[in-house]
Length: 519
Image (cartoon, rainbow, N blue to C red; front, side, top):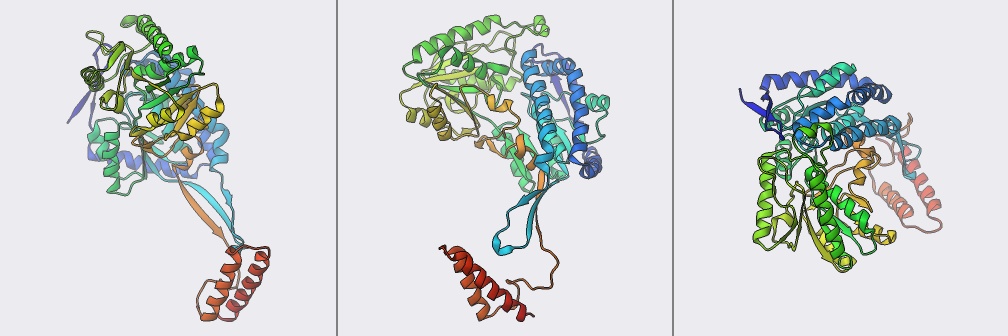
């Protein structure tokens, strides 16, 4: 049987191996999931939230152990892991504890006067078994947050982690020790081979977070079975800084936004656009601070003590991508302001800033997904917007200006799914905001209300009281009925002061006619 090796990216120590799932094992997983889905479907939203509360208490109590495992498999710092993987997860749980019952409650819908006295409603019901495919850069939170949405909406979840950072054993221990509902979450380990089998087993919905290339393949396979897919893909996020922005704060934001998790964040700041009036001092301050981050970062044994400023990269293939983009930029005349190299015999790349870039360079157009940002100057607001929108991606962006009216105007003009004003990556910190992108960054939204509705069968209900009368639009048709209907249509949509009276008149004529002329 095929196996997959999982290694510590800091030390390259072999942690464990994974075996691919067989067809029989996948079938057994789905059978258990369907039984759990039937249980979840009968539970109230409050009862599901009580179950989720068990997971919250476990995470709060055992967070250091969870963080240690995440750091061991990803190479990120403890602060990065705690902030993104633990804090964000707990905040999402608390948000839904307060709002999920309202979001998933049966809703009244408006009914047009022509359909009076009927009543309209919307029900949000579970889909069944959902497949969540998680990425390697944030292996816990980007798998667990969509899983939470699916569970609260009443679905069982099969969770396929990345084979690079599978966190094997973490979910099993969390579920067992917390007393969470059996088989409601089932982790399945392996490479894309196992992922392919999981899709072929036909889940009710797929939520995928990962690369554009992998997203296209998953969408193509899902299309063969008409499985709905939500894709959270890559980004090439711009940061627009105007002359009136606070220089110190903006450079601090750029550094964290670009280098947190070693730049391995789908919403990392990868393109900096600075207005020409502050360009030179901005670059100088950014360079000095980036180099300070590099000297403050430690590597090796001390990293486990939590004092690692910026962790290492996680996978060798992503390091290759970063190094190839930097080599291409150098060949085409770009300037490496600082960084640009890898620490020998490690997965650590120094914080890197690249200037004098253009649209022919891979580092400016392709997702880098490493601790690298490009920096360019602009003159006008219109030019900044055009430069930011000149990308195949549309995931997130930030706008920096003391003029909040201008900042809002620019935010509206940016073709993207999320915008932070005078901050970076801030929209992801609020579970009340839906998250997702457009263009090659994918489609669909999770978190907030759309995060629950996206994992629901949204069922429309029309209620008509029991009656002996025939509907106006039912058979039989006739020339006279058509005439009355045409008059009613003119009255309803033609406007005018007497339109309501005319509608009532012709509606009554049509109703009387329909009552007298039945099949």
